[in-house]
Length: 73
Image (tube, rainbow, N blue to C red):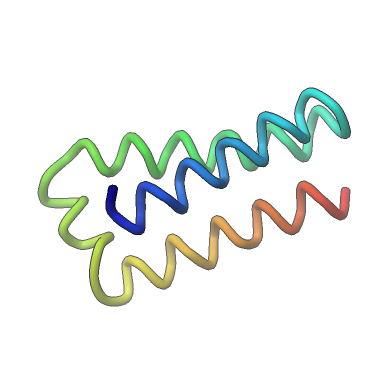
């Protein structure tokens, strides 16, 4: 499993837990971010850009924002 998939699965899991038990809207944002990252890993050219360089940093930052937002909302 690549690091970007680990980030996507983490965001998706946190979103599903928050969507079910804490807040519907905040969990939904993390679910969308996780699902989009997982869909992006299916495409080979996008996956290569997400694994290294600024694409990884941007994906990590967006996922971190979604996870933090889902806990604070």
